[in-house]
Image (cartoon, rainbow, N blue to C red; front, side, top):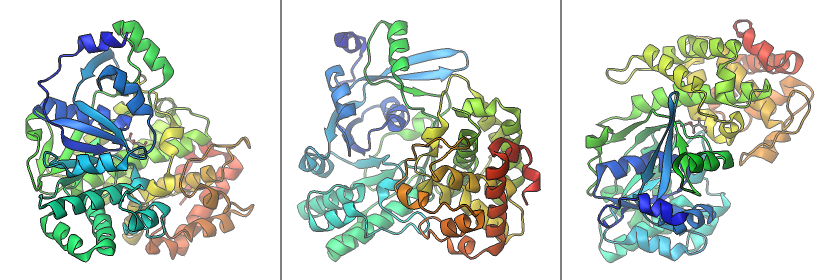
Length: 473
Ligand code: CS2
């Protein structure tokens, strides 16, 4: 059966990798990897920073896998053959460093999720108390993504090689600047001369990435096998839409991204803000409120008219007024396109999956809009309700008292903040400095609105509160 997938492959002549990618999850395999494959001439060495599962499933397939487009009018499978090798960092960190330090490597790209940068989400600074950072300061064989970047850059520096471009593909604001910051800080603690060299010669372009990629399920594998007659143990599922905006500031060569629809621009910031606040901000809002209301996926949540109305209201009244549109973008049209993407019934994107790691996501997705709007005197009742829903969710109990499996690096600390008195719960959460910026921590009006929203969630439930959001204040 595995031979079947091989047989369907039309391998490009074996190009050298050129790109090492840290964090070989479904998102990168359904987004960046496809653009690189289409651009041609480049291959990718994938690195799993945690577990061997993806490598073990891809290896018997010769690193090939199927990317399945889930459109309203059916499924379109495509075999992707851009991976040249997959390494598992904990098994052999030296092999990962060697690949990153190889003269043929020009780009190290990353999708390691928000928490993978070991930074403090509210400030963007390196978290020196992070156990992996403490480890990587002392050991030449690292564990963290910043550790791998710094140690590999050190090898290149020592060998007289130029640095690689660090291409961050995670949903962080100014993601290039954040990575430059954590890499610079860690490098300086290890070797100030190295930090100076990186500062002068390194490149950390910011990017905006977008494609909805729900987790692959066992049912997806069976359906794909029935449709194609070939068993693929590691396919990825994605929506038709995709967008990639990259700041065109590489320090070495790069694939011809502009030929395959990537927008190469001088300033990514307005695109990042638009996407993080309009897409990810409402994704998280729908995830917490929808989960509490008993909706399993984003599409299910959108099929509830109360939520479909709520999300449009969030865009129109709360998010768009705080945004500067990127050149040529119509934010109203962008919102309508998002509503259609969310409603795609072929995409079963679980609210639970999006709800993960809220402490790392809320600052750039929701809290920035809230802080700017409050400073400008604009009311944000819907986003305030979403933050209260996150608090309720993080308590670990749903509206029926059933346990929620909360995945978040701060999960135990957040759960312990829950009190019977909503005002006390809100005060406890607002004091979490990693999440809330000072402007919101010290904002008594915001605390009062959050308390009202949380009391309402406890008393009336999420759906009723979403229906009555105008009244939250
Ligand atoms: C989602 C994102 O899981 C999440 O938090 O909001 O993965 C989202 O699907 C992508 O950013 C879409 O580009």
